[in-house]
Length: 367
Image (cartoon, rainbow, N blue to C red):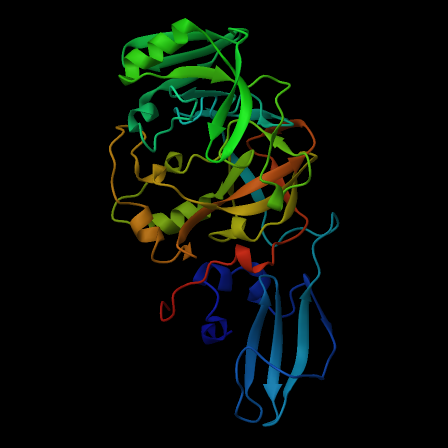
């Protein structure tokens, strides 16, 4: 189709499989010949044909008879079911766990899904003297602290120094800790951990742990009631498609690794930014749902191997992934169910997002 008909869609969205053919099985034709009072595009020439974007996965074709817009085909979404496969196979290619918030992540072959997210994921966090969370946003050298999950605890390595944190370490001193505008209960881990991190980062800080009985709610605007998470910013999972990073790297002079964006789940297959559109999906019997696009903070500009800051990738992303003064890359997820997911598992897509908040529009004249 003529891309002029898709001015409101980015190139990645306009080439998405659901737009590739008006006869795609996700669509059903109905209301043939219905007259409509208004189209998104003015039609002035008799017989002129336009496509009106009604939703991410539903478009309508109109023609004009000089006086009316006549709906000649209403292609409403018919979401896939278990008997229907997505247009291309989506497969988990990488999984990451970040035991201590904002420290280096761990690439794993499989991860256990708990009610808070991946097991061990951001169950520990550094805080300042006011019990406010500390991240790479203000302390970029945290990126250089490597974490390993051992049988009985965590090992943190920074340059030649090492700290072991037993899973059962606790002072039994509980306090309220603040993450953005959210507060939740945690407990201080140990004086030894506090002293080690304070010395390594050259600042006063303390290590805290989230007990199993803490109930920190996920952002309730886009999540089921009583959904909980760990010390993550707002959601238990972040998912990014490898095709999205590849597309971004095609615009950069120097390619960037996935660790700049700190996802939990990376998948292959599909189109760039397909994660924007994915609604409900299943991995190994566990239900997930795309809840909210991830607005990026400055952390992706920090080299995770050197802790140095730059302008990319946010400078480039701002040119085509910006909406309402926020830059988006990746999809935050909510979930239902527990179990194991592994590299190689398939994403079985059940539905697609079609609300305007999932739309990232390419600037006019871009193509």
